[in-house]
View 1 (cartoon, rainbow, N blue to C red):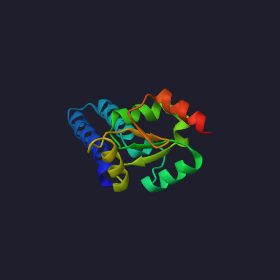
View 2 (cartoon, rainbow, N blue to C red):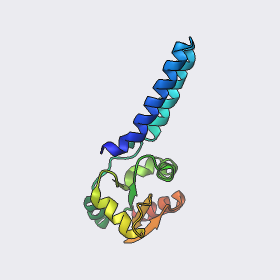
View 3 (spheres, one colour):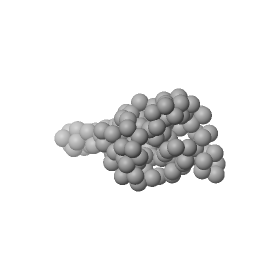
View 4 (cartoon, one colour):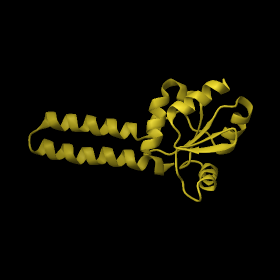
Length: 145
């Protein structure tokens, strides 16, 4: 779980160091702006921007019942962020599995990707799709509802 927060914490820490340097130089306005920018970057790279993650086994069980895709992701992945933001509000209808929080999810992704933890990996009808187009995912979601 801690692994998912390392990158956001580094952004906040780095922004804080830069802001302290700006305060020492007498630029308090620039320091405040720097902190805001780095906090926003940290928030975007945190698990908070993704729908609540569940375990791989639970996601697969739910997908078998409702036919919705399962998305394996990890925080800090720019392709996962792209998928999440392009899906918009419909992202909450998918089953999201954070591979850094769920060892079974990481194992599923490694098995599907020749031992690599390549994300986002979307599972639809038992087929794995690595870094699919968000429009395709949206289309699959509309078919399953």
